[in-house]
Length: 69
Image (cartoon, rainbow, N blue to C red; front, side):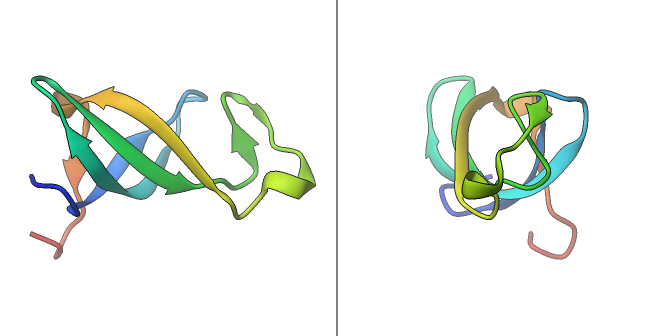
């Protein structure tokens, strides 16, 4: 996994979203994902849907998207 890798990100509400690695720290990565129906475990307001969300997650919790190496 490297900066720019396409990954599957665990979401606060229990789901998963496709996203991208922006930065890598010792054991964590800063990632971005497109906001959909929910954000931070709650229903997302219409005005932020389809914008980018950002979070820092443990690298071990990320999965590289299939076919994206």
